[in-house]
Image 1: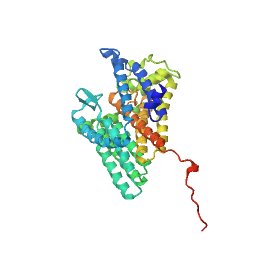
Image 2: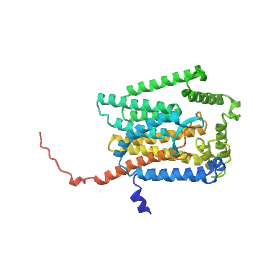
Image 3: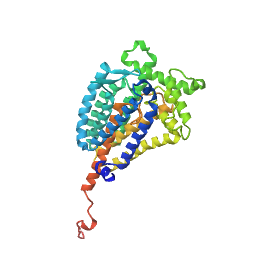
Image 4: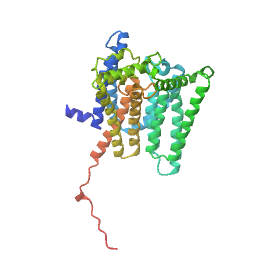
Length: 406
């Protein structure tokens, strides 16, 4: 069995362990957190089997992707970017609504989020453009402009229905450009422009009534309302303990975390799973802490931190810029999304719609996250193969060069 794993599961073994452990945690916690879905389904096991099916399919996809040379991934990302651009436009007009957000397309009975494909494509294409920048100012200007064009086309399309996803994508690309040594002057101007746009947008939403704004901006009023509610709860002692229809998720998330204590109530014994409307997606981390306690919550955090740490180590050992930037970008997307989800569950930031990568319920999110892992596995596999085919030359075999006295 060990030889079989070594033969087929190439790449970084620690990352494979992290991936497998996250899948195990996901299956265990989804069994408990999906109780409300089980009551509604024709079969109590249906939601769980569906989730495990996506995990199994995602694991097969990760395995298949990790066998593909990253030069082909580089080429396919442009096709993915082109496709996701048109699907993001399509979803604005023909998308499926859920939880007051239109983020899904249904084609031939299959429901998926185009924004997930867009995130993956933008990160890889941005890494490709960054890797083409040489030491000349002319190169930096051209490719920096191209990256901005791509971000300006994709992020606003995501922004209309999912502000947090668009913001995370922008932050990840920004960090990739910083690591890729884009000049601080250009990055500073970009950050300042974005900050100014956010301030103006927030001010406009606060000043202009919702009825006077186009329908496309309805979600902006939802974001502002969440921020205002979050500020009120932080500043009012009475609001901290009052449960209303608006703050039901947040309050029951807090109760779940409080019930967990140090060691938790053990998997399958959660009470708050029956009260949290999104216990299986946005607030699954609260259920993890309730059932596995503080130690279980920290264990899950450590798994994601190992991913980020290993990604940094891998990037420093890459022989070229493109795979290094890709590994950093994909791992950052996973980890930033993770900590935003955890921050929402622990009431550190206002509610957003970010799932916990590889753990929350959601077919598109699971499959795309598995592709992230597959690409990282593939890059580490190729690195190992390059090292095997380029053996070090013994010192005694090196040619001797003699220098005459000048």
